[in-house]
Structure formats: structure tokens, C-alpha cells
Length: 164
Image (cartoon, one colour):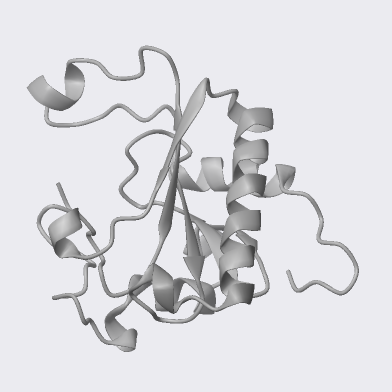
């Protein structure tokens, strides 16, 4: 409900960098920013308002809104981090599947349209139930900080010559 009410969400499609939670997160330490891993040109962070436990976002450091504005390096980094996120989620939480996607623009459902981000949502058979409809809430089995710690501990160590 905090998200729906607009808490910590920049206003409009062209929110300034100083309002952007995706620009602010990498300036924090990993635990406070809920950052699971950092790549060369993008990072992986837990969604503050997850659809499911372990819902991750792969976010370029650069404040851009459109997928077509990514450089070749950023595109490769986002893809590699997404693949690694799926591997780590499988090892840590054993999901049965994933939803991957980017919402481009407010009309497409982007909550923060000004800063591109890819969703990596682990899914389990039968993970949808009546609670979100009747109770207008979703039960989360652990705190976001605990989820971040488990995923970060399982993230592979970067190879030589990589930032992270």
C-alpha cells in the first residue's frame, strides 16, 4: 500500500536523478540499499514492493528510461546479471519458473518509468492465492534484508578484471 500511495516514488516519467531510488540505491552500502550484486554497468537489487519473495530488479547505473538507449556493454551486463540472478534464485529458493520483463513507460505499467529496470520474479506452482484479493496484501515468508543476505551470499564471485 505504501507503493500505491506513492511513498518513495519519483513523480512523473521524467523524474530527476536526485529523486530516483534506482540512482540512490548504489550510493548506499549493499545491505542498506538491498543490493544483491554489482556489475560493471548495472546492479541487482531486491524490489521494495515485491510481487513474490526474492523479486529482483536488474538496473543499469545510468539514469535512462528506454531499453533502446542502453549501450552494448549495458545490454550485455543486464543480460548476464539476469541469467546469474536466475541461477542464484534456483540454488537458494528453488522456484519452478520465472517472470522476466521490463515495463517501458507509465502506460505500460512502469512504476518508475524514468529509470529502466528489469524484473526477475521467481514463481512457484500455486503461488497465487486469495490473500492479495481478499486481504489486499501478500504474505512474505521472510524480511527483505534476510532475503538479500541469502541471495548475496550465494552470488558467484566476479572473475579477474571485472568490477563487483
